[in-house]
Image (cartoon, rainbow, N blue to C red; front, side):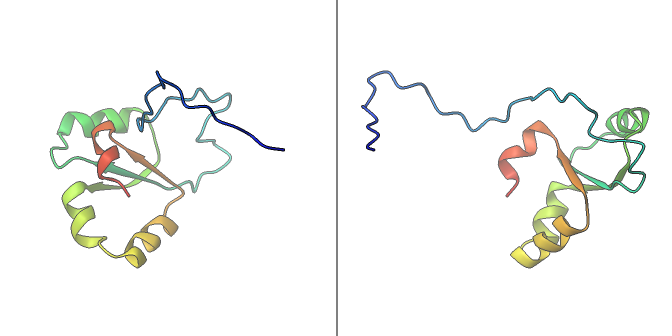
Length: 100
């Protein structure tokens, strides 16, 4: 079996941007009260942003700014420890290119 991919003159552009995927069930469930989320934000994290997060009632355990992330989590081992200490990570749209 041989698959041939002919070259396309007008190939569609490849995008690295994340896409929104609708989920049929909620990501955070009352059945998991110990679900820990880490939020990664820009250095200009305002009070209004913090109030909006609190109003959404998300179980965010920690908020890490970009500068702190770059300083404290330089090595692979540090990033691995951070990854193991939380169940999920949320990030601002503008932070996506900065993340590993």
